[in-house]
Length: 296
Image 1 (cartoon, rainbow, N blue to C red):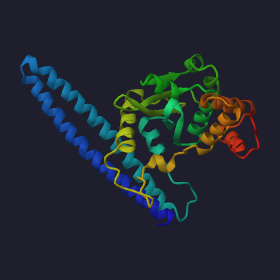
Image 2 (image 1 turned 30 degrees about the horizontal axis):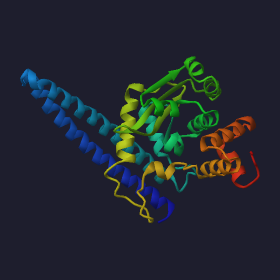
Image 3 (image 1 turned 90 degrees about the vertical axis):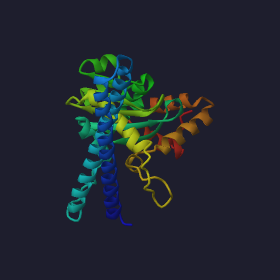
């Protein structure tokens, strides 16, 4: 399958997921309406039960509708790009661009975290989101790790950015970012990572949790992942677009062994050098792995 055919298949899968999400939203709306009606007529002893069920189904409805919007928007953008691809020399639209647009933000990033809050995957909507994430990786402070640690919605803007993050805040301002919001990607009590949005215009923080839940349900742990590549790996847009940062992990492991320190300390050493040299973690990791930058 050539590249254009793969993108057309990605658009087909996105439309399929949008259709499934739309159906689930309709079912959740029906259940919610039924419980809302029962709550109005039920005895006092059962009214709270129906009210709670109605609230749960309305929340599910909102989540499925957000998932539908994201996947459908991504599919439509891909199809428009494919129609123009033979003549236009542009990159295909990213899934994260649809996430950013749905949230009402300028840029968006999803960061998946492993043990001890180590980053295992980063997917960004554009260069601005990538630059904002790189700053957090180097400086060791920012919305992704704060949000995942607190496991709750985080919103910061204006002067609060510098108050909360003395180093990260001013660096964001230099990028033209004065608003940050983040929501955890949660499955039950487990936090898989964070959705963060950035921009000179405010995102809609009241809907960000719903969008984060939509990403978690429809992308990360979806029961509909029946599309696989030639290696048997599910075709998921975040995994297709995301940077798995293998060089960073390899460099941290090498430093840990060379210096005889904990992995967390090796990561801090990598960050310190990146900050001092005004480089990204990827650039420093590349030098370490190739033996061109011994940091011990």
